[in-house]
Image (cartoon, rainbow, N blue to C red; front, top):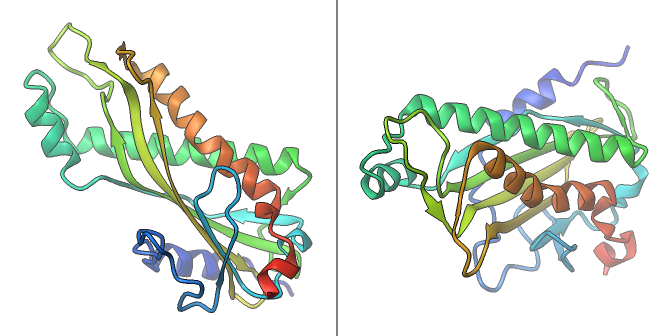
Length: 225
């Protein structure tokens, strides 16, 4: 009998590979997982794929709940820079939950539209997708505040998107991807309300969802070379 994917998903949630290669100016050709650097896809800075793997063979997916982490000292910087705005831990948790839900919504919609189907069982054509948002930097969070004035910024902020893909049968990692993305309006200051922040986050996440649905557009022969 085919097993549920719970075990694999829990394994994925409790590994912490988010110090992944990708921060260096010259990324390594191979990383410890045996994955090889391949030409990046539009919207993704760096992609590593297991040699010989063709991601297009996978037609079903299971999406692990995304992990979300703020930029270091983000709360402290926000509270120092805007005396009338006091960001609490509960505010950060709410933002993280919203970002995780939005990423899940966007990824799922793009994959379904591209012909993939959702699956909770192991099979040779089922991939496990483990996404994460790192270094989340929201310039002007729309939270409850005693202030009646808007905070004007030159953009919504930035985030680093990170993703791992696993084979559901072997539990072998197939690919990693990492990229920095931002939403900035050069020379234009505007109020960043919740609707604007959400729209900006959607713009930052959508290229990743589209690249994933295309299988990173990395042919198997490129990973083999």
